[in-house]
Image (cartoon, rainbow, N blue to C red; front, side):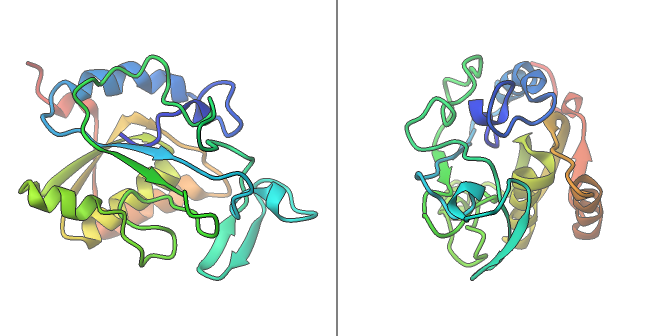
Length: 200
């Protein structure tokens, strides 16, 4: 379950359209899995991905950082803030680890597997392999950023990836959703509705 946090939901600084609609869906889906991992954006104040950290820059502009292009975001999901908390209606009591992303001040992290430098692992790959897991089902926010990059890195790390599209919402900024769909097709990442998860 990718980043189902207040900062990305209604009223958040980086609200994804329709984000609140997925909460009951992800709650239902999670009941069907013994292993559930939650991811959480966990930025320090002044993070380099924030437009406010770059004089004269505005949210949603793109700049070059040492690790490559970086979209500048509104300040969101700051460590310990209400914005960083999970949506209050998220109800997955049996969830296992929480993978915190973007806590290094100089590099953002969309993927649950690697930081945006594409080299620093989060440890999720090892966690899944140690449990003999070979396929991941992805739901959450946002489809064209954190869900997309997590799916890409899952495939590149040797896991099958299935995106449950009705349990995701997208930002769809400057063609980002179309680019994500093309990437899924190219990498053989399956997209399906949550109804493929069998009912109890």
